Length: 440
Image (cartoon, rainbow, N blue to C red; front, side, top):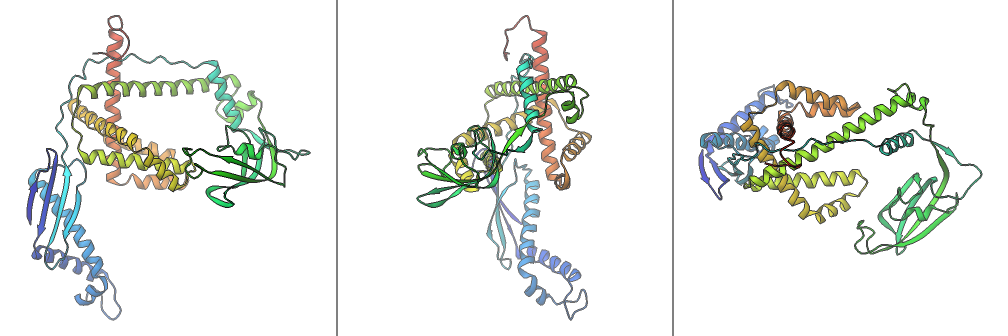
C-alpha cells in the first residue's frame, strides 16, 4: 500500500492510496474461494466450480464488492497509521479501478477542530415562570370536542353554506387544461377560509348538491404555490352530500369518554397540567437556546466545510419531507427548499457550530450517556410507535451506527440540560444582585 497525505487547509486532509496488483489478487482469490464454497452450479459438485465460470457469471459483482471492501479496509488502516480521526466519513473518489493494474483512490475529510470552550461558567439565566390562562384551557377543551365530533348528514337542504362539511371533488383548470397538482379527489371539506387554501371555500359556498359549480380566481406572480402563481384558474367542483358537525356536550360524560378522567373537573385539571408542562418545556428550550447563543458569541470557531455541508443537506431533506408530508407535490417542495437556500445555509451553519461547541463542553465536563440510558431511550421510542412502524423502528436502532447517532444526540441534550440547570441555579442564588436576563 502506497499512501500520500495532503493538507489542503488547516482542517482538511486528503489521503491518496494505491494498492499493488499482488494485494488485490490476494483479496480476489479469497472472494472467489468463498463464492465457490457457497454457490451451486448445475453440473458441478459443491465447491468444485471452475474459477473461469465463476468469473464469467459473477465477475462484475465480485469485483465491485472487492473494490468496496479494499477501500474500506485500507482507508481505515491508513487513518490508523497516520493517527487521523475524521470528523465525518471520508469522501471517496476512485481514480483507478482496473484491478489488473492497480486500485487507486482518494479519501478526503475534515479533522475535528481542537476546541476549548471558555467563558461559559458563571452564566445566569432566570427560571421561566409559566402559567395557563382560563382562555387557553377552554380553547384546548374546545379542540378536544372538535376531535370527538361526529358528522350528521343534512336533510332537506341542498345548497352549501359556510361552516358546512361538503363531500366534494375539485379540480383546477388553466386555459381549459387540467392544472398539475390542482386536483382534490372526493373527500369531506370544511367550507371555511381557515380550512381551505387558495380561496376554494368561495367555490363551494352556495354550490348545489349534484350540480357542477365553478369559480375563477387569479393568483399573483409571487403566490406561494408555484403551480398557481401568475395564473387565472377556473376551479370546478361537484358536491355529493352536505354534513354538519355535531359536538359532544362538555360534561362529565365527555370526560369519561375521553378516558383517564372521572369528571369534567378532573379533565380540566389534567389538561391544565399538560399545558403547563408543555409551556415549561417550550420555555426551557428558549432558555437553552439563549444560553447557547451567548456561549457561541464568546467562542468563535472555524466550522469544517464538510460539517456545514452535511447539516445543510440534512435540513434540506427534513424540510422537503415535511412539505411533502403536508401534501405538497415533490417538485413544488423542491422549489420551496431551493427558494429557502440562504436561510437554510445560515441555520445549518449555526447547527454545525452548536454541535461542535456542545460536544467540546461535554468533553470538558466529562458528561457521558450510559448504555442503560441509551437502551431506555430506544425502548421509549419503540414503545411510542405502533404496528408495523414499531418493528421498523426497532430494526433501525439495532444498527450500531444509528445507536451511536442517538447516543450523541442524547449527550448533547444532557450537556445543555446540565448547563441550563447550573445557570438557573446561579441566577436563583444571586437573584438580588443581578438584573434579569442571561449575564456573566
